[in-house]
Amino acid sequence: MLKSFRPMTFVFPLSVALCLASLSVNDGRRDDTSVLDAVSNAPSVTYAPETHYTPKTLEHMLDSAVISSSMHGNIPADETLGLEIFDLDSNKVLYEYNAGLSLQSASMVKIPIALAFFDRVSKRKLDYTIKRKMFLDSMVFYSDNYCSNYFMRLMRGPHAVQKILRNNYPKIFDKLEIRDYLPVKKTDKSPYGNKATIHEYVRLLQEIYRDNLPYSQEIKRLMAGTRWNRIMTPAFPKEVYLYNKTGTTARTCGDIGIVAARDIYNIEHAYIFAYVIERNSFGTVRRRKFSEKECDAWAMNRGNVMRVISEMTYKQIGNWYSLPELNARGSSEIDTLMSYRRGPEHIHE
Image 1 (tube, rainbow, N blue to C red):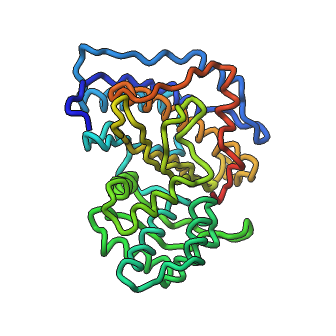
Image 2: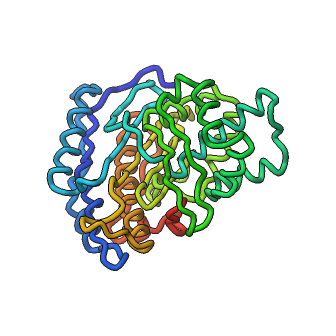
């Protein structure tokens, strides 16, 4: 780690990024014109080297941006935003918003499930067989819900998994709720009662990164191979690597991850980016249920909000630690950003 840390002001135009959340959804299609306008009109990120960076200054600035976006309708009243950015070098929270609220975990719960399984393996109560390794790969790489349910049944159900985690890792999990199996078919009806806070995700990723948990290296291997992400974009340098897990339901869009890169002295620096948007109602103001097409479009639009904010975050942290710079990206490349490593935005991802 660098011995000196030059403090700088983190000017983060979050309100610009969050305006993407207001992209219109017409017959399930995104409004590309709105996206291009939002990006082209976005003010550039600025630096103030002579102003000392303080967490309070950053917190006040980003809170103002979030409140402003809410007032202007960029975050609808029926949606809850949770965000935390944590610097693993300084061991400080750079920003948090609603990080203590319990939000639907979707497929992000699969990392705690993997930890519960490895806890049993480390205590010789379960074996880590070739078959189970293949199932873990499928559960995390491809977000396979059947494999997730296999491991929960192996540990005697969702409530037993919750008990393992909260009893053995109380400093990480204090509000975690694992109540339900995950839907395997589209016809399956799940209440999605599994919930966690952004703080819990961040504490979990801290311990995984520092190899303080059973089979931490194996969990990092799994998270490094996930198929989807809402953190990296084509603008990120190829030297940057990511450990992450996304989650998507008809109500939730999120991603939790560790972003890491090496500076000009070959020293690794990393930070945690955890972000969840949950809509509180399962329909429009007329209580009409969203179609699958509308859900896909909603998840895609909210995912783009995450990607833009992630770029802004990396640009600032990269400047502090002399990390590889973002690639130049003009408005003509916005469509590439939209589809980057996307695959289908599975509702049960």
